[in-house]
Image (cartoon, rainbow, N blue to C red; front, side, top):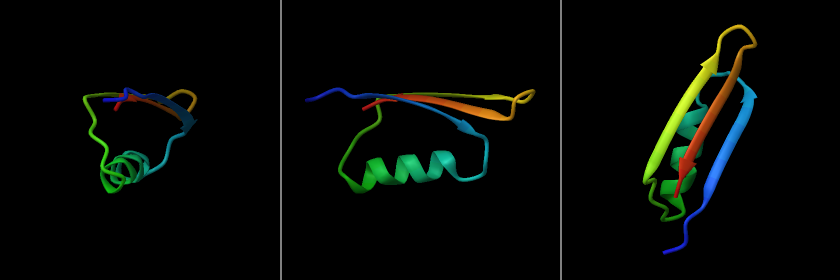
Length: 51
């Protein structure tokens, strides 16, 4: 199985996790690790997962 690590750093908004995880599911991917953090001061979203 091929492992891919994706890091996302973008302005925070509703639906980011849903969009990414739905894309992975729709392409037959499997998430084995996921972590997220929102920097409230800068309003940035940080998201990491390993597929």
